Length: 338
Ligand code: EPU
Image (cartoon, rainbow, N blue to C red; front, side, top):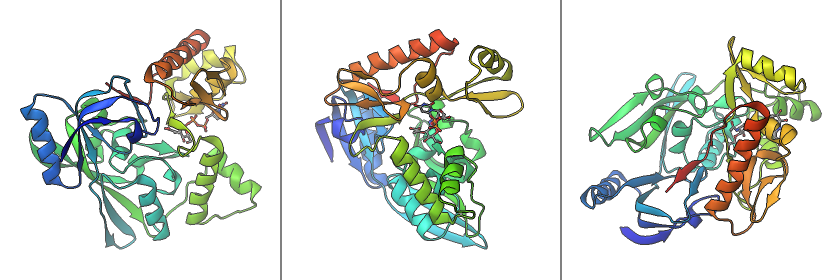
């Protein structure tokens, strides 16, 4: 069913945004095709919405059809120690991660408690606490709108990188239907991230279990990031920045206390939260209806009835602040829908 003039506010975790001219909830391939045909016939654009947890919708809303992906289902295929788990795009991400951990399957535990849906995980290549979706994604089953065919893209074909993928470079071309993950019955836990290491040292747990790692990640996220139940937010508003080692070295000479994370021999990742907090004083700021979170300067929050325009104004100040101090042009991680 295609609805008219639906407010998008309640469909985003920022709780911001005007109406979509048209809106359709799709629970299977036929309903998806129907919505796409409507967009074609009326010559209006479409936008596929998952959990709305990484979006900022314009105050004026969207002049097209928003397709809310709600295809559900999870299947398990065992092959020795490997288990291929395929989930439909509309599954809630953390409910899915919880289910795999409860079944004792290794691979997704560090990505616990991330808001959003399974369908968004390959688009964003979601990442946290030393893991990324690309580490376990086997393949992604999509509708290629351009060629009008369903295809399976291998992990390599998805061209994953930090918060980046083939899907991001071809907006509107591929609609994720389901994602297959390679999980393990017996696997290796990744507890190297500083926050996780500190957590287990503090708890005096030398060899944590799979479930304990999930619980640790949930606790750390709850401590560091605003809960979307209480705050309008889309998590990190900007991406971290990867620069050449030489540029990082220059910054380190100017700011010796700066934290840097080596990516490989030549590249270094700069945690922009650190820059925003320690060099620009942007942690826990409040400007009218918007602000940054008290424990995470990279996270912009809606303090009340914020508009998209207010969020953008604060974000621009943050961009300018980082540029002034470091010469780095930061880019939003959150997608703007207009
Ligand atoms: N830091 C500060 N001040 C702050 C926040 C952080 O100095 O206000 C410092 C921390 O002490 C740490 C460094 O900055 O040394 C990095 O902070 P953190 O470990 O919290 O990670 P991040 O780089 O800010 C990224 C992801 C998060 C993810 C965390 C944990 C991006 C854009 N963000 O944040 O993802 O949860 O790592 O792995 O890569 C999201 O995408 O929405 C998100 C929350």
